[in-house]
Length: 155
Image (cartoon, rainbow, N blue to C red; front, side, top):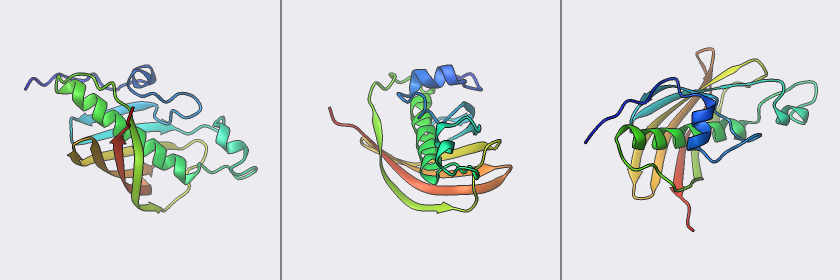
């Protein structure tokens, strides 16, 4: 098996070539580290300009926990896509969807100005499904964690 090198960091333009998400739902800005089929470290710079802060919550902006989980799932998608590329496999043209979240924990709020670090580890790949162990942190302190299952969508 040929192992190619993925140039790091992976910027948002490259991320958009790998994921179908777009504004306002693309929640990963950069990939900083990659161990193909093992682990990824990505980041999201949280700005007061995020549209969800208009209503969550006025005068006390907090990133919704469900969007932190979505950012982790997107990082998992990047792990899958970049691993296929690094291992010289065909680019995946399939869409994977978030189908299950287990053990979700929220231990701190994410607010404007934070840099959300997204660490995702591949626990296992079974046919058309991937199970990820995920952790989000800000300034080295965990803010959320979960086990996430994604599956290939049906046409």
